[in-house]
Length: 318
View 1 (cartoon, rainbow, N blue to C red):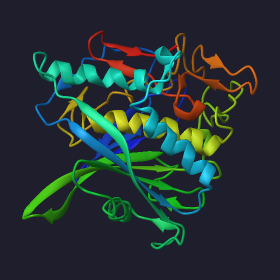
View 2 (view 1 turned 180 degrees about the horizontal axis):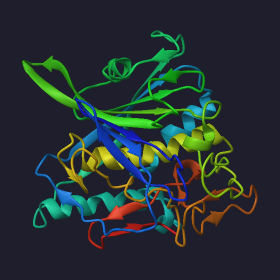
View 3 (view 1 turned 90 degrees about the vertical axis):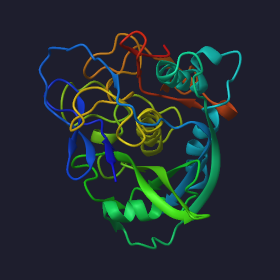
View 4 (view 1 turned 135 degrees about the horizontal axis):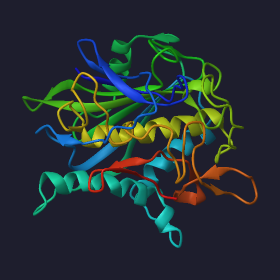
């Protein structure tokens, strides 16, 4: 089972996300100097996610209906453009991942169509309020395991192994139950609500960072620091899941410490970004909230830059 960890931790003056291996692969932050080495993404011959894929949401703990709507609207937005601002839409942001599929087969690239699947709500904390990595996988297995990405979302009062110390979320894969005599590998993601546990680590730039330059926090586009932070981490992990679902897809560097589509561009949300500054963003004239993507039902989101394999640069919407 591969397990990848997404984080927005700050160390010294530069945000850099990388990964480490136990018996599984995991993303962590490493210290870095100011020297930027060119990123050369490679395809490692493994399968990417293709076809119609349902994103099933497993809500663990207490979430308000309004909070669940923030996430579900984001998932819906991945395949729904919103004219006349389609150039800054969530769907346009996601289309950067199409370029990875074109590189695999430029003549007949495979297509990936994401949609919102089923939602499972566990408000009784059936496994308690302190979860191990194995329990996260067990929760993820509750969703459909064929043609699916199962996303486990834990509430602010749930502790998860390694949460806030080394990670803000994970993505990986696990072998599912046998269906018609055939077993399927399914992809999963976990993201935690960091609002009360470590917003300076996992909800930047909507909260002051614990390390690095101390610029004022931005106003969250959905007025919820924890959930807007979860969207940032979920978006990053979705991009990594699509392009490197089983640990042998697209990544840069050694397998023991790979960088993926979003983690290769840490802390970058708009043009002109630098450590401690998210970049030039759009600002809602009414609320003062910062964002870079329009979504379904009038939503606004802040989404991370994605590494564009065709230009070998980090691509932003604004």
